[in-house]
Amino acid sequence: MPLNIAREIARMQQMTPKELQEKYAEVFGYPPRSRNKLWLIKRIAWRLQANEEGDLPERARRRAAELANDADLRLTAPRLPHGSPDGEERTVRLAARFSGPTRLPPVGTILTRLYKGRLVQVTVLPEGFEYEGKLYKSLSAVAKAITGTHWNGYHFFGLTKPGGAP
Image (cartoon, rainbow, N blue to C red):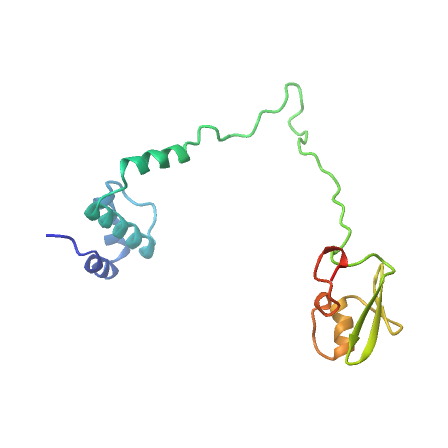
């Protein structure tokens, strides 16, 4: 008589974690390392279904074994060179250069936009943005000052591509 997987799952949901561990050991042949009820149910159901409907074909098993071959993986850190002290660092540290957001045009550029029939001009400064004599930390703050609502500053000024190109 074929096994009803759905009925087995419903039965397992009523079992305690201890009972599920025993069922796992019965199905797999070794005890589980987990007491997580949901994980145990999923694993047992998978094994019952595989036993009932057939496991992976031999060709698929061979391919999985090829992919899982970890003979080339390093399991330990490489040895220190002969004669080097144990505390010597082998990691090379380089200072990372950050030039700021790549969507911003160079310092000194004047961004212009026509907003509600009015020409808006904002100057890019090293420490922020200047609009109508006031300094703002971000383009979003400038856009909010202009519109009265929150805007993404890059979007408002059309700076959607690297280098400030529209």
